[in-house]
Image 1 (cartoon, rainbow, N blue to C red):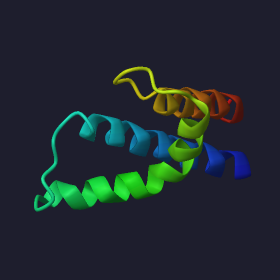
Image 2 (cartoon, rainbow, N blue to C red):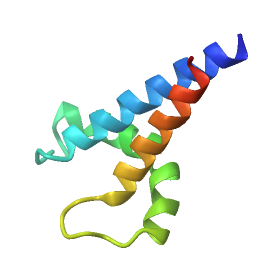
Image 3 (cartoon, rainbow, N blue to C red):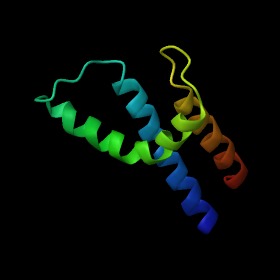
Length: 82
């Protein structure tokens, strides 16, 4: 039961990470309705991404911290959700 809960939480977090990545491709005006969603996505994902950014150097315009977090969580999810 705990494994199923963790599996679901990691899946939801992966969706949130993906949504933040897709939203980052488009300019978001502060007065648009999407700005609130963008703020929530940043608030939820930044506690994981910010420590990774301190360790992983930037590679041009590609955020490697996002890739490490996404693939790391995907691997953890595949182990837990057998």
